Amino acid sequence: MVLGQDKIYYNVLKTELGEDKLISTLNGRDYILVDDGCLYIEEVQDLTNNGFDDLILEVSNGCGGNCCGYSYQIITFDGSQFHVNETVGWDWDGLNLLKTSFGYFFEVDVKHSLNPGQVGFCKDKTELYKLNNHTLELVSVSTLDITPSIIEINTLDVFESFNRDYPEKIYIQYDIDNDSNPDSIVTSHSVGNKYVFLYETYIRINNETKIEIPQSRKRIGVLNSVTNGFHDLVIDCDEILIWNGTEYISK
Image (tube, rainbow, N blue to C red):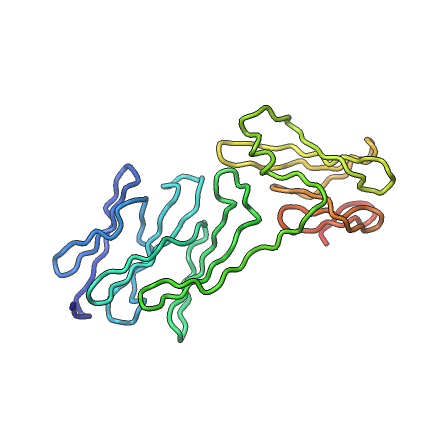
């Protein structure tokens, strides 16, 4: 058993291959706690109120690149051994540490929109963990509610055709203004090595009138509901656009 006044030191040994090593030093002895990934020390403090310094470790999934977010590990010491918890989160915004009378809680986002292709953007979620007896326990998960559409264009459709010829502009047809004639929703797209975006989206009514649509980057779809004679639209996950008689505006 180590006494609480014995200082624990944490250090990351950096490499050029994304195989960093997290090393703790206690009473002159080194312990390798994590030996893979691009690692950074986020915060050192006593998270278990037992007199020993614990650690919040940041894991850079892209190793400094702009493709991916960060994940986190909580590492604690109980006086006899270190506890390395599972890796949680996938985001740019960091882990939110919440100190309460019931102990420490950790709030972290899991953003599928940061994954290659950015096609899971409506599956993003926020997870809340509690540190209980040196173990992270999942307390709650909050997710986005995706608004279903009748017909839509989304980045998943584009991404799945990534290795095939795909026109610069893509469109779907639907009778937007309920005059029994098909109208078109048209959008341009940008496909990079890892990201897909939609831009310059508009509606062409009866092949004549052009209606610009507020910027949609991931998804645009037609809803069954109608406002002022035109079908409502959904952009991205759940933002509803309605027709005010002259243009589409957010509901």
